[in-house]
Length: 395
Image (cartoon, rainbow, N blue to C red; front, side, top):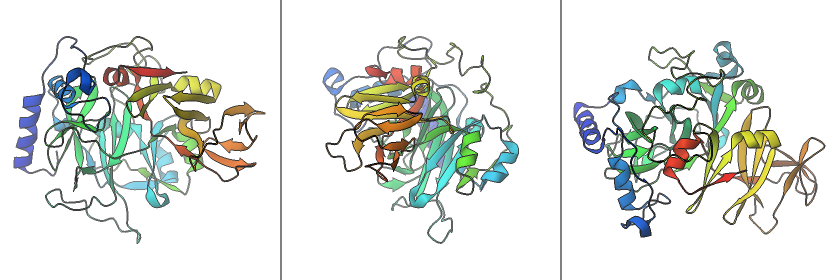
């Protein structure tokens, strides 16, 4: 927790000690709708106040502590061409599209050592403002946090604001269903990384303002975003072996990421899918869905509905990435589209217009129209299902 005062450190450790319980066996269900578990509803879908208390009681204290994964603040970035000198084409990277057209790329092999990147965007003049002072209330500004939980393969990003106050985040080192527990430096509340919601502390029940993150491979990313994007630099101020992953490899089979062994306590196992199968988790009010990434890659297109929400998942072969969109046009009118592959192109059945995986129409009646992206959370199945046990699986 570099940069924190002794008083703040003491508060963090005190809270972690109180709410973290080392579990040695499987606990009961962690999710309860307000009418089932009682208590006031919160802004986290599917969770009442009582359900959040049960989550905080189930935190697994690992003993690692916050310094095991030091968060990054105001990191440096390099060009795509410079980053290519030390990266392999099949490496996993996380792509974030920020306001004003800024694109930043975060290599998984860096985030696996830090879990949290507190980023701040340049202003219109290109100047990087100071990080918000968490002790002074005020607008959050253009500051964002990108997070990665290695044991669950979960990626989330959100505005760096807890409640009404700007802040920055770090990882406590503790886990819940194998997923990282975060803290914010303003209120020292504890947050579930997968839920992007506070489960303990003054902010309990609050939800962070999330933004989409695209899981992709470097080979395609460097081609598409050359000259347009910045890449998180390995010059972090810490000595880490950024060329390797301490948990295994997404490029080599037989490591933690694709075997069946779980190293953390999980409250509920759903055997409908292999535990570490990669999915995109979705929410539609109090309904939850999990899109199997491999299934979309095989079919290239998946039309489906979550509740009454019509969705489509599109596979971007160049990036090896899957995106999810609302199948209604950007005006959100009654024109519902159904997508197919025709002559190796993505077309909608209704007009035979041609689309690209970014959700943009290139040719036809809907030329230059855009589908509205739907926020989805990359995660391993076991973690998503432990938090959302009533999840629908697609396909």
